[in-house]
Image (tube, rainbow, N blue to C red):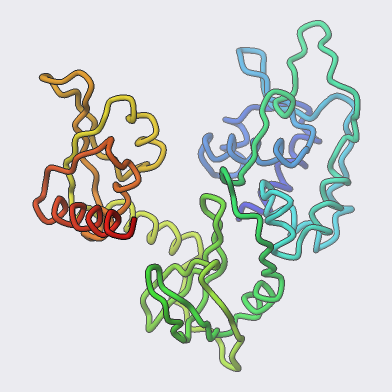
Length: 320
C-alpha cells in the first residue's frame, strides 16, 4: 500500500479502533513503526485531530467526539491529502491549494478554542509542535508548476531550456521525467537524460514543453527511488577533502552552512581559539563556498585548494 492510501486507511483505523498503538498499525499496514510515526506526524501537521499519548496506557487515537467521513473526500481532495505536509505556498505552486484546503476542512475538527487540559488528557501534538518547511530567508518569487504537473501526469517526454549552475548560457535537453522533488525549500525536476538520472533546479529552468512522445523511464523505478539515489550520490561524494583552520566561534555557523559536507571538527591543541575542520566536495571548485568565512578561516590542505582561495581573494581585492 502506497503512502496516500495508507494515510487515509490510518484515519479509518483510528475511527473504528478508538485507540491503538504504532506497533499495531505497523503490523496492520506492513511498514515499520518509524514509518507509522512519520505518517501520524504528517496527519497532525495537516490538522487532522490525532492525539498521540506515550506510556504504558497511551496510544494513538482521534480526539474524543471527532467523526471523520473519509468517503466524503473527492478524488482531487484525496490526491491533495496524499501530499499532506506541504506548506500552502508549495500547494499553490502545484495547483493543489484549493483541493488541499477542502480536504483539510473536511478532516479538521474545526476546534477554535485552545485545548483545555482535564484529568490526565494530554495536549494534542499539533498544539505543542509547529512545522514550517520553508527555508530561512527564502526567495518569495512565485513559481507556478501546475501546468508542469499536468504534463508530468500525462507521462510525456519533456523538452526543457536549462542553465547549469555557474554557466551563463541556456541548453536544450530532451528528458524522460519522473517528477518534481522538493528539498530544503527548493523544487527540482528529476528526469533521465539519455538514460542517466539528473536533478534540475527549477529556479534555473526557463521553459518546458511536453512532447508528443511517451516518457521512457526505467521500469519499476519510482520518483522516490531516483531522488534517494541522486541525493545519496551527491552527499557521499568526497573527491576533494579540504582541511582548514577556523575560528572556534565560527563552528556553529559552519555546521549550519556546510551541513553534511563538514566531515570532522577537532580542537587545535596549541590554539584554543581555533578548530581544525575537514570539508568534502565533489570537485575542487566547491572550495569557493569556504570564502564566505572570510578572514575567519585558513585553508591549509590540499595545495590546490589553498591556491584557489588565494586566487579568489586576490581577484576580490583587485575588484575593490
